[in-house]
Length: 247
Image 1 (cartoon, rainbow, N blue to C red):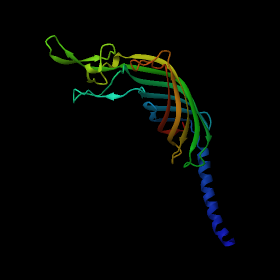
Image 2 (tube, one colour):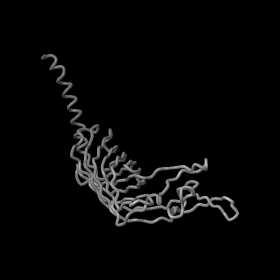
Image 3 (cartoon, helix red, strand yellow):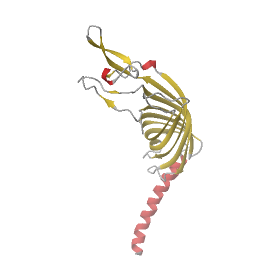
Image 4 (cartoon, rainbow, N blue to C red):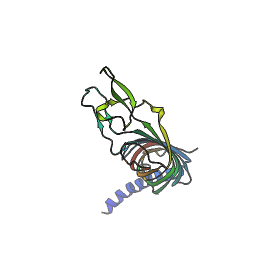
């Protein structure tokens, strides 16, 4: 046992010295700012995200963030015309497609710090800001029959009081009427847990899970014959990549 101890002791000391050196070297590096970008999946859609961070200490940083979000109504069901084989799919009853742009400030606080550059930082993140929603009208290809009984089609903005499923051939291009929508300004609040890990001390690979609430002063008209909401609550998962800077 004594011989085994004498053999293993230098090995343990060497490993400890390497580990301590890694931690010490990481602690000596003072970062001032960072930037990350990534993709996001939430309970009703998808998104892109960007953050710029200012370090206030080794464990805290202030954030400026921007999210670009696409979302769907829970009642959206894509369907196809049974009369036209080559028709495009459409969502019956959908008044508007929704895009959201969030911009705000937040804070990231590390409460479990990595013990080496190969470890994991776990932090809580929160933020709030402005949520600007854009509602783009839905356009459909509609059957038209003239006085002589000739059948044709026209692209029209969906009107639930005029268009029935029997009138609809299919959906028009998503970009039809793209600039004829309406903006709805609102507010958002976000909170989550961030798990950051990278083999390089100045690089960022992070997974974040959390929840976000968007609130607007008016109900957003997404679906016809639906109460629709003036708020949206979503859970999200984001994967981000970036780098830290010392200047």
